[in-house]
Every structure is written in structure tokens, then in C-alpha cells.
Image 1 (cartoon, rainbow, N blue to C red):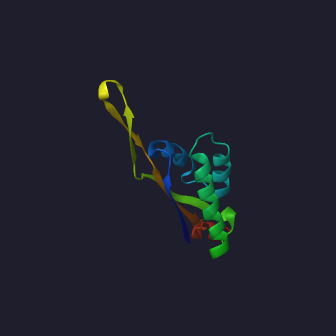
Image 2: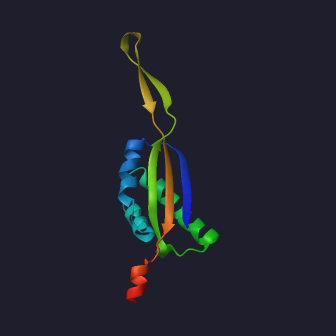
Image 3: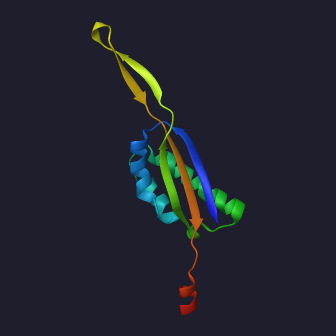
Length: 120
């Protein structure tokens, strides 16, 4: 069972959000929560809130235990840019691109393979 959660228009550049996202890709849910809670980065707190939201919806909607969940897929894509201008001397203006991110998180339930079942 897969659980998806989406965070749109996060006011952090996608390049900086990917640094945090790469830390938890493929990790188990409790481990990812602990990693994000101790990460010092602007985008770590919103990603942690997104992860907690996905975990809670997996518990409530599908009855999946938190210990069985892991981060199957997480991406930080580029959102719309806020275009601003910075005035300079001699009537010039330099553009400022305030970038935003869309983060999509997919949690999945760990399944026990048949070989492990046969050994037990």
C-alpha cells in the first residue's frame, strides 16, 4: 500500500530542499523522523511536517503501523518563481528570482519476502 503526500509552493529553492530530501530517501519512517528533527536546515521542518502528515494518514486511513513504513520515493521539484527587481545605480535593475519548491512524498509498507517466511 502506498501513501502519498504533497507540499506545494514551499518558499525554499529546490536545490536546497533536495539536500534535505536526499537524507531520508529509502529510510524507514521512524529513522527519517529522527534524522529530520535534528537536521539544521530551513527546509527540514516543513519536510518533517509533511512526513508526519503522511504517517498519520497511513495510520488513520489504512491502519498501517508506523514501524512498517519506509520512504519509497521523495522528490523536490521546482515550483513557480517570484520575480522581483533590485534597483542599482545609473537606472539599472537586476532581477531577483525567489524560487519555490513542490515536494512529493510516497510512503510504502515493508513486505516480508517469501524466502524469509520459509526460513522461519
